[in-house]
Length: 335
Image (cartoon, rainbow, N blue to C red; front, side, top):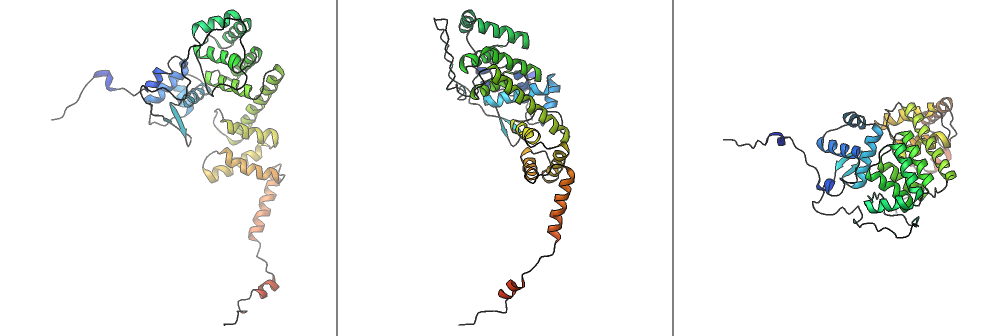
């Protein structure tokens, strides 16, 4: 006899880490929650960022940003280009996050900006209602920033509000610099809390505290985006957001080394022939070699490769004097 337990619709269930609810439900945004739930539901299955985005009706950049958010939070781990759920200890605090200590509202209107040292990396603190109300009441700049943020991004989530306050109060960025960051994020379609928090922190650590410095940084970011676009086109890659290392490599090839698309395409073909996939690190070794040799176009590349081939097929030359000196007939006398 066989037995089974039929619990109706609950037969089709999947596990959700307690930490997701206990520690992150108030901080995560809508898209971040959608992504982690979809990911857990399809655990063990292979999918691309585009498939994930299509399934949820969001942009690919938003899907990637949400996955990065959960990697930063410790619920997902990335190994060898794949994502894995991280086992969670039920009832145990997340060691990656700060203890939940209520913010105290200063009785004075002035709020000191802590520029250095910065708080622990990847902190997304949710301000309590009293603190938020006090900051909005005492600071015209904060009110202006939140209004600008709503006009740019729409209704702000608690997590986004926390990021904006942290950008000013904890990271020390001026309101006008944060506003520039928001407009850039909107322009490129990456308006998730994890991305904005990451860029704000990077700017603070890089000393981007003026409009002039912010404009220079945005110019650099735009050039990196354009460089990656050229590399993607030359290599025929599917549309996706690059990793930081891929973006830096593309900027180096296009903007610093001034390599033409034909050379990048040739390097990509050699990369795929040897590794079976796109690898920025492998391509960088190829392109760096060509750059050091002064190769600027395919004609020079062909000449260099022909030269190398001729050297391989060239008969070995021998030094007669050296051969005679090492002749095996000249054996030492036996003792």
